[in-house]
Image (cartoon, rainbow, N blue to C red; front, side, top):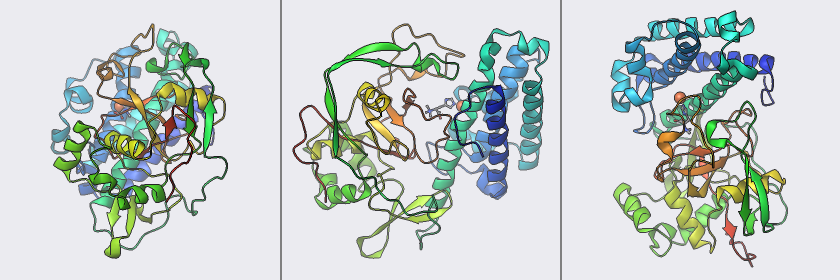
Length: 401
Ligand code: AVJ
Ligand code: FE
């Protein structure tokens, strides 16, 4: 129902209510066993995400701004830094208790933000409704993760005839020149508005040397060409770390691809298996695979600022379907201040979390903006990530199958 990014209190409240409803509806499609099970080592059970989002509302609105006493049992289960990922499935409460508690928290949150009591309105975190925007975006990000969880549930079942296409329509790639030129110069990056996360702040100016960027991300057909050319076995394209990761995990195709008879593939989506569309951007790849493809194609990954500068000028096409791996790890902007809590960005400035830009088909419009910085470790593949090629000199030919 919400097609645009929330801008004011009414928009954000409506979006938050819609996240609550969508999460509940999603939970109702699952059995209790599916709700509780951890399907992938990097992902938590669906039920844990529901509890975590409710705890964020309870903690920030009722414990931090309000005067509720901190509930250490809830914290130990639903704060990620206190709750070992592989213990979450066994520690979750029964479905009925979980749903009753989360629904109660959400009802209180909505009624408080709809008509904020004095203690809430007066709090510094409520300047420009900051806390409401924060909780709404946080839930939107976890809703995206729930769709990764559903995709992992599909992937745990035997690959069969494709179900409905995820978007309902066949994908048709945009046409146009293959590469755009980003001129050398100074560019503004980052954001300071009320919805900007701490890692997007403060906005500032950066000097770029100039580059050529592919107009659209690498497609499934191009990835098949890389595979057919032996790209997964060609160590000249892989970093040592990447090759070791690939061998350890016997990786020969993207995470959400599944082989059929005769060398064909289908892909897993949140509603079941889907046809692999040749012109759609490839997804389900690690940073190691993205780097290897770029080297194979005689290119490199873009720096996150090249991506942002090009996107702000409207030069990039098709920024909506996959997260795009960038060359650089997440690092604080000059003058960074952790906000509203240290754990949101600070622990991830460790050089081990490359930035991803753009957004995938599961990303809520309230998250998609030129300045948004996503980040995952190099080996992570479940987050619908692909890549866009970049070059230091004009590309003579963009490799196509
Ligand atoms: C930046 C997407 C990796 O999902 O763990 C959610 C975002 N931070 N709750 C994640 C986040 C706190 C984060 N990622
Ligand atoms: Fe979270």
